Amino acid sequence: MKPTLKLALPMLAVLAVAATMSAGRRPLGAASPWAQSDTVAKPAPAINPASIVDEVIWVVGDEAILKSDVENMRLQAEADGVHWSGDPDCTIPEQLAVQKLFLHQAAIDSIEVTEAEISSSVDQQINFWVQNTGGNQEKVEEYFKKSINQLRQDLHEDFRDRQLIEKMRAKLVEDISASPADVRAYFRDIPEDSIPFVPTEVEVQIIVRTPRVEPEEVNRVKDRLREFTDRVTNGETTFATLARLYSEDPGSARQGGELDYTGRGILDPAFANVAFNLTDPKKISKIVETEFGYHIIQLIDKRGDKIKCRHILLTPQVSQEAVDQATNKLDSLADDLRAGKFTFDEAATFVSDDKDTRNNHGLMTNNTEQQLTSRFRMQDLPTEVARVVDTMQVGQVSQAFEMRNKRGKKVCAIVKLKNRIPGHRATITEDFQVLQNVVVAKRREDFLRDWVKNKLMQTYVRLNDRYRGCQFEYEGWMK
Image 1 (cartoon, rainbow, N blue to C red):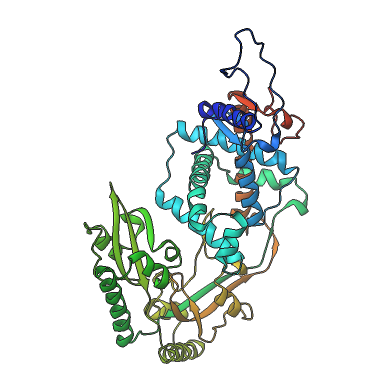
Image 2 (cartoon, rainbow, N blue to C red; image 1 turned 45 degrees about the horizontal axis):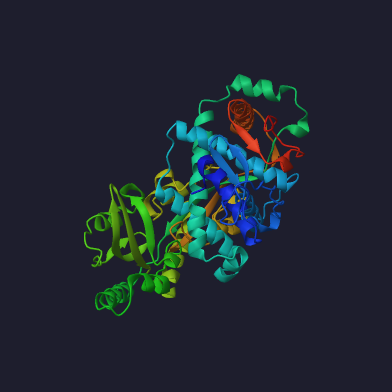
């Protein structure tokens, strides 16, 4: 935990004492067996900044910002490819200070985040770094000079704070909206080049067939999981070791299959039913089938309505013969669609295995932050779909192709390009939602800026003198 103001100020004293004593000096005012009672204390020599391990540089309310916090944020930003506008030595501490204001309000408003949300975000961040190094985990550890487990522990509080801040910001602006009249008034007099440009968008229908997994392959996977259970039960190895070596869940394998405290509603129902019925950490569950594959589970702990457990996931492999059979059926279906024997809407409803689209006549939907829409920018489509759609004409039905669905399973698909909307300047009639989002975003940004300014006026702030020459985004840090 980062020290609060009550702890941070003594920490400075301890650091200063450590620096003076390491140089063979006693700190000002310290008792000495050879000191005479009438000895006049001399001022302590200046402390070499290089000898200070860490220090409090800003205090916001009762929260301290340490020099190490700034360095950690700088390192993380560099790893993410973020470039700072202005002087990072001023920008980073101010950004941290603004975060403290939102965190303080989140505590007042009792905003909460779950352990599952935090763990998921931490894992995504670490996986992003690993992928950026070509899958080389050791390079990430070398860059941060910490093991992956240490990074995970260090990031936990940071990501908890990030999510609290996002929820607090969302709560502050949740009631801000814009009427059609507001949108028209906002864009009535602005220059044309200030009107948002909407890139090319497409609407796509899809029919998916899942290749049949041979019973022999299912039995092979189950036998493998039974073997893992026997090896752990016999004391030959540990569940965590086998998970690291063999689990096909990329999100948990590196952590020994461990899933942090998670509520029932977040887990696959079949997985949750078995996991929450476990009572003995020394025993391993029966084999569980979910839409992701087959699992075995080991209980770690239960806390209220949440469970902490490990699991090993194995996914049956689909044979090329099964893929070819599914592809041939879809190609035959595509020929019938082109011949007009029935519509794509009908085929998607009765033939597709994709439960996310078949009840919507196969129409793919894009769940953005602002809305659920059927329009996709090309970069937002699944890679395999975008590659096929890129060369199609509106109304055309594709040849069958292979792809990975959202659950990582290999499937076969055909698509129809229902509509293509060329890139253009947004208009009220065609792109009202786009323009409304711009107005709402601007109003929310202005509201949050005003909120920070007002919060600053009511909050105790103290910063190190060396920051007094900075050009800050917000006024009011120096009082």
